[in-house]
Image (spheres, rainbow, N blue to C red):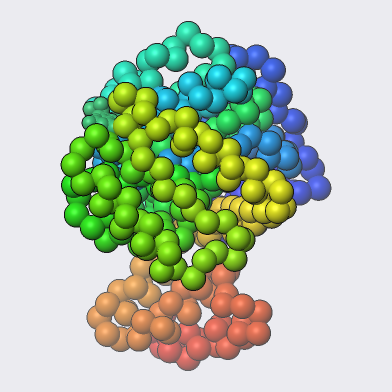
Length: 346
Ligand SMILES: Nc1nc2c(ncn2[C@@H]2O[C@H](COP(=O)(O)OP(=O)(O)OP(=O)(O)O)[C@@H](O)[C@H]2O)c(=O)[nH]1
Ligand SMILES: [Mg+2]
């Protein structure tokens, strides 16, 4: 069952609009959204149907690839262009690891005191898409507050990190030499979303080979429907080498997105996905609550566990009991089946 919280506010009654007119209001909104949960949800509703304006760049790659160092450099590039920058660095390791977060702060310290730069590290969340959702919300607040560029840093290790970068207009995937076949080490699914590859630590042996592997992989590919050919850029982030070329490549992608209308289209698709993901997450949280509460759902699970009801029938019964069904046409059937199966047992 969907929670009462999400059911009660009707679309016809718009909540009081959220005004982010002071640094204080902005900071409070960010903290609230970072915590997630009903309060974050309520706050995001108050933002209303906001047009997306900030250019969102996702930076992902293996742990220690130099992502934060690159982000630090890119902040400078963006500032030199006259843009303000918001950064969300996602620490995927665990909610307890302060290490990486501290590391990010230190690496991006060069920008403390610059009011045109805002940096936030976020810890990983539950497995139900909470991380992607919270990151998206923080990115949207940064946009609403007026940051021109939003940089999202995440370690490309799991699905939730992949979901995070999918929020971006432009996705840069970082590879480093010395980790074996560059293409093999990239997480499946990331190749499709990469608009640009960076071979960082190009001061280390094997950089040329890594670049060649990526280029070969790109040439083998079928080419992209949108006509964009992802470039491969070599950088030495610690020394600032290759950063100009990287920034130029990023800007070329942005220009391509704007010129082809892909930017608006990507954003429209993203909003649709977001709505569906929010519903999906709420449903799954609702289901967890139901299972946790035991009761009838608990008995159904026990019956399935003990082999007295088959899993499909148990699932259908749970759906019916929770007010969820498997599509309109199946509604009666779904309700009817568990009744048959449960005869005499409940
Ligand atoms: N040799 C060399 N070292 C680099 C380069 N870029 C970054 N580093 C170093 O690599 C280490 C990791 O850099 P980070 O920027 O923290 O890497 P990261 O990908 O953000 O790390 P996580 O967020 O922990 O996954 C630091 O000690 C950097 O100084 C580079 O181009 N060459
Ligand atoms: Mg980092």
